[in-house]
Length: 291
View 1 (cartoon, rainbow, N blue to C red):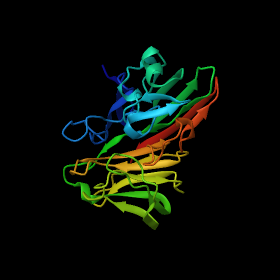
View 2: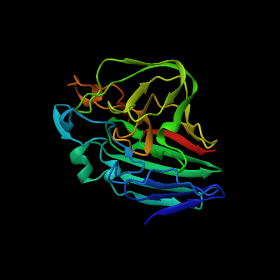
View 3: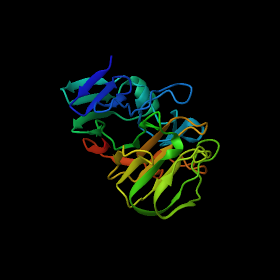
View 4: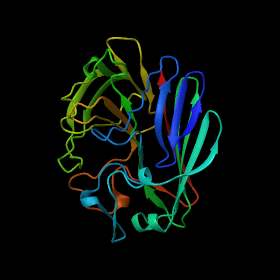
């Protein structure tokens, strides 16, 4: 059953399965902005990526010589969360460690996902708590799909992404196995915008690191409707849409990323993996605003 939040601007729904958003609808014009999870293209709406982001080489990783198996983006997106609290404009879900998670991920943790409405903005907050006696290592990220086009009188190629600041930034290419290549391919050269085309994602996601901007907007050339996306504090940002021309785009802020193609070390040594000492808490948040 979906949990519904609402105010005069937005209706938002989330479910316990994956603590996933399933609806972000603008009440002012009736436009649904969250992807429908149509399995013909991609059967998810806005999954959380935990305790890994991206893909592991052969879906395996090692800690202290022990091997563990994890599918792409980890297990949180397929887990049932506990509903902790809810009011008209806020909801909080929690996932804790159990015997099944310990077989995949050898740490005792709590993951909380909160959604909060304020005006025409929705803030998603992630909190990771270490409930173990040892340091915990993890990555975490978001993967919301936004309908693109917004309206029937526009098409995908009417849209573009606009960064807060001009960017000179390469992208990290992805190999056919979904692993990051070591090379950085030149992409942005003192530019603020990326035009959306069907060919843009032919090589998988566009993965950026260390951007100057802390926000990006999804805009179009036909009307003034805008989605603002604040990813303050996240060191990586990816954009993705299926290359067969799906009518949505994912804007993905990450702490961490998939394995590099030649990585063969301990999980704790992987770039982007973060340590958390016993009883410590990590918190991050991103915000979607509809203008």
